Image (cartoon, rainbow, N blue to C red; front, side, top):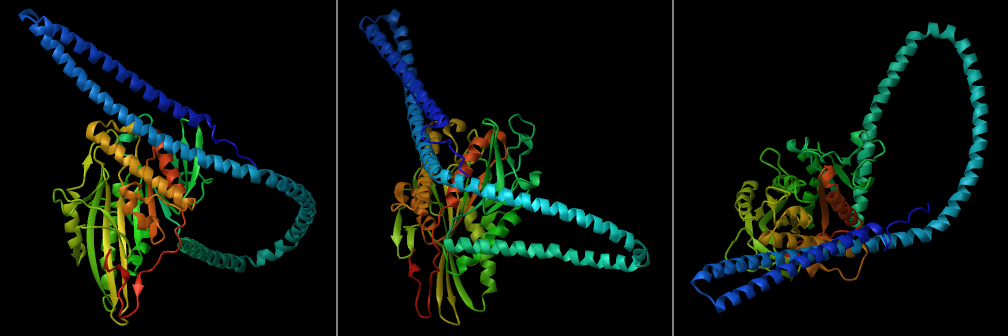
Length: 554
């Protein structure tokens, strides 16, 4: 229809947010000016005391010096807060502008199409209404005739039915048995629909997006503000379609529906999630580049989905185990070699978690088969146990700290990389595939983290890199000529996975709690935009017998 205005460049809510950010900056600047004035006054007192200093005033001078030192420390802290607030405001303003532009474009599009569509709809409704009334009258007459005929048939058939009750009962049982097979047939149809959907996505090269909502934790069930805000069809909501979720923003009194390629509720298991991911693992051995990454606010369950626990393994260990299972299954026809590397991106620096040599500087380079990290330590591995042993050593080197949102918050982006070379012993053909498993650092507003000093710097760098990821997604979705991959180390490292040469899966994680609805909506909106990106059909890196894939160097 032609409905839809709201959300243009003059959106009151967005303007109010920008005004609040500006007011906060002005308040911080006022505090800074006040502190500077107090420091100047204390310095003047110190100078006056120093001119006529005597033994009686020595103590007073020392007290003034101490106050001066305290005020200078306070001033330094205020400067850090001002810088943090300015950086946070820039990121928020940038995101708000991006939302305004998207809403304005959507409004203009709907306005142009709406008038014409509304007129057409009215005409169709008029024509349809006339036909419906004609058919309704015919149906009424037919119903009356059928009712009379049924009554007559009942009168005639009752004596006959008494004689044929047992044969009729057997016939009914036979029909019920036949109908029981329809459930299985429906299941087959659903699986075929899913297969065709995935085929379309593969041909178009869309970034596939799964959504997973973590369960409420025991201590959250009794706290105020922790009411459920995310709903699935199984929550008694038949209005929500399959793979859709609804998010209630109680502060605004609105609800928004999101559609994803797969969705997993709080009761979902690690096995159910991996069952949807497993097909991508096979692609790596066939010579494709694959990237799976988890995105969401701190505390939304990203690391649990990717790594899991000792009793509930996540995507990473299950994927690595499946790689070596497939290698064993293909051992009669193929020979494979596997290399393993782990890095983190911390404060816009790439760190090798398997080689912590001080001063080692890593940079992204362009190779024959896309981007790679120069001098990154690579470990040849021949079994799942070897990978787990190496991974355990690297895990201890990852940067984590506590903040107000999560007791053990990951302060870096973690990238596990697996490089697989294969050779067909029968034909001599070879293949090369690489797999990136990415656990992104948590996104959150600086005001919620309670961060200061080094932790504040980390939060700023995390948000800047995730904002750069948003810019890349937006540019790719709108098919811009220039994609700003180099704006952050994160997007530069993942350029192959976000470009036209990879099968990419994004798992967006969100909290079910009402108090987190604002952050959840930000994450889900970002994921919805990512789902619109078409990368083009992924390329298979193979070569005929006697040749070697271009990927001899990463």
